[in-house]
Length: 338
Image 1 (cartoon, helix red, strand yellow):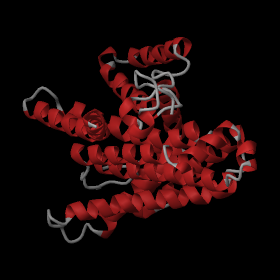
Image 2: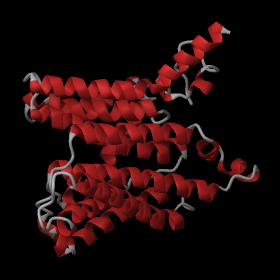
Image 3: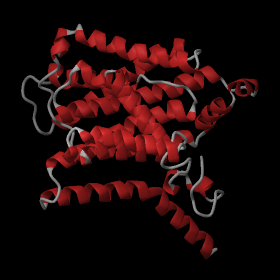
Image 4: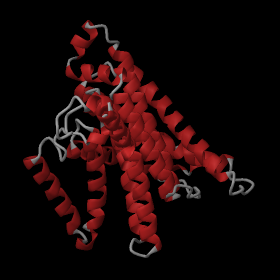
């Protein structure tokens, strides 16, 4: 009896380990910055790594779990960024806000960014998810470019000149909170009946339909959720940079997230997080090499794909990203494919 109780307590502690780890990470970063060991530049790089991790997790749900091939994440980020920036800049910028009101306006803008991106995800996903493979990739790519062209035609958000004056409400604390919420949401979704249905679609869509799975519903659901996460990430990004330009969200930016996902390992959440974090920090760490840094970055990617084609995590998951009910049934070392 005591042994069972101890195991339950340990399992509960493991369940809360990611939240505790993020809190410790935040405290360490703040303390190092206050002590002068970490410059604001590197703190911003860490913020970009967490934001890229959120977008890559959304792409993991669409590409890695449901088996679709979308390359339009930059379009959803732009929708979230611009709509969120419009809320804080065009709607609530006059008169100057109290410091007590700003957090609520910021949260409202993030909610608007996520919802608008989700609506766009539904509008593009509902008719186009009947397509597969390259055809779906072309549609999502075209969608991102259409959004970029539309933004250029809206003078209220700066048009082709860019959107300036966005308040810099995003802090490391806010970004850590939203990154933690994204990980929590993704973990619970993937290990629920909805996530299992998405995995069955990835493995064999025809067999899933035969077993009664509404494949269109689950594919659209995953696509919209991935778009909403990208929209929230875009809202955070807008309030880190304070400036947006349509060219920040071109198709090259979308391919960056594909690289993060497949270099880290497309089959696991761990791969999405590790890939986005490492490949965001690596180019900045190589900046002292000037023009050669992109050459080194490319060589690293080529070597990674040659010697680790399944990604850095190789189809294995961090134990704390697996619910303890399933974790007990997995391997002794705690690393398994979900």
